[in-house]
Length: 371
Image (cartoon, rainbow, N blue to C red; front, side, top):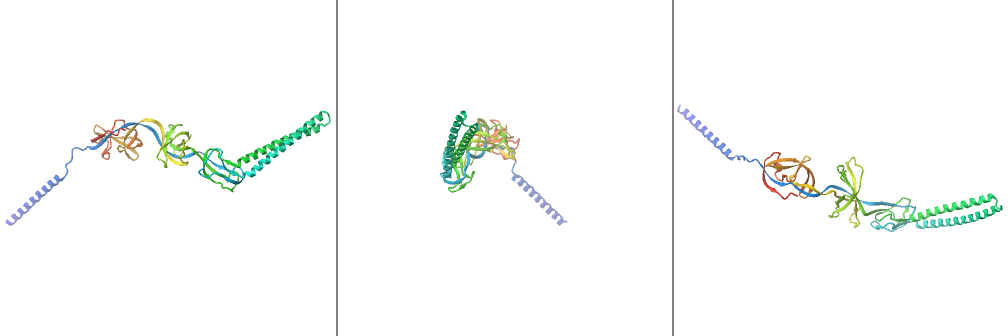
């Protein structure tokens, strides 16, 4: 009996000890658990939406083509006697650059001139004979048939003069064409013919380009069709230079490409210093309007997700999500076309933790981003 009571006492004491140990462990875990703060606001840094005056532009890319370009072909048949220029050479308007069998065409021109002189002599003799026949006919010495023959001979001689003069004109034209000349001020882009080559009419001799003035041809989205006007300024750069270049719009396509939904326009670029080369790629912007009031926010304020751009505007300590339409990146700033008002305060830090209606705790306000 005594042993049983002792056994129960030991078991009971052990159970109390275990219970106290569990309570102590729970108390220690509760003490180790971090205490939840009553302040659940998100710390943010704010920046004021600014406004500045900037040019309204659209970005463009395109190619600089020569204003005038031509492949000069042989206008007469024959062997190339000589070429006077090489690729890269500068040409003046009318400059002689090649000769094609000029010896033969000079001889043909002299022959044609001689034929004209002979025909004119024959005509003079026929007219003199006609004059005598008419006098004799008045005296009834020459018959009417003889007079008719004299008239016909004079008319035939006159027609032969006209034919000879036409042949002479063709011979002179061929002689002139045998001397190949530049049709405009240009530079030789490629020399195709060589001395000794036999040329058929139309065979290419040279390819020349006028690079004093270039055409900057670009494509613009169709939504800008009403904005692009002649004489607007185009600014662009090329890889060869850091300095910008300018041109003015001089032609606008009347149609939109159904595949790209864009239309072409071109600007003339003065290249008298010849820094720019024809067929160079260029990127730049078309200035639609000067000194337009433009809304600017820091780049960090804009969040882009799934094609949607938004910012968080803080009002009375609460973040409000605003969907915005963005434009150009302007250094550390972002152009905003719609969705914000000047003076709005936008979050530039802590956006990843923000949601519409979130409470915020302002750490600082940056006034230097007002543009």
